[in-house]
Amino acid sequence: MATRIARTEWTGSLQEGSGRVTLSSSGVGSYDVSFPRRAADDAGGVTSPEELVAAAHTSCYCMQLSAVIAEAGGTPKSLVADAAVSLGPDPAGGFRLTGIKLTVRGQVEDMDAAGFARAAETAKDTCPVSKALAGVDITLDAALA
Image (cartoon, rainbow, N blue to C red):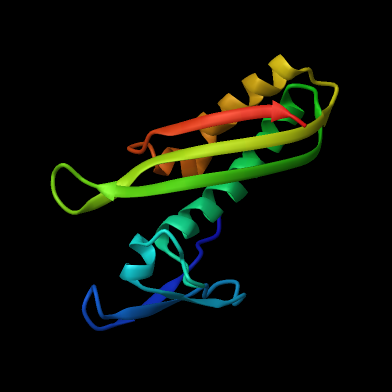
């Protein structure tokens, strides 16, 4: 399997500094990051590790869910997933990801709501990014659209 690369170049201290994340393998873009914007309610046009984790999680999850649905005999027509990744204090010091709320809505042929819910839960448990985030509480809200 392939390996993908991203790079961050950072200048300055945590509070006054800033950085730029580049998606090196795909070349699709570079994005500004800063700790004050990361911790603020308004991102102000700056991304964060949490937003990048959310993007990775939803894309991986939709791929895995489409595979699980097909294995169960359904045909996925449309899957829309959102991930809300929260940052908070770590009791051991510093910060940590405190939770991920994964929401998915699907249009699926040949699968009822109960089957979709089972497939969605299986995908949550077996998605490679979910596995990588095993130390974070991941909740799921899944329903047919």
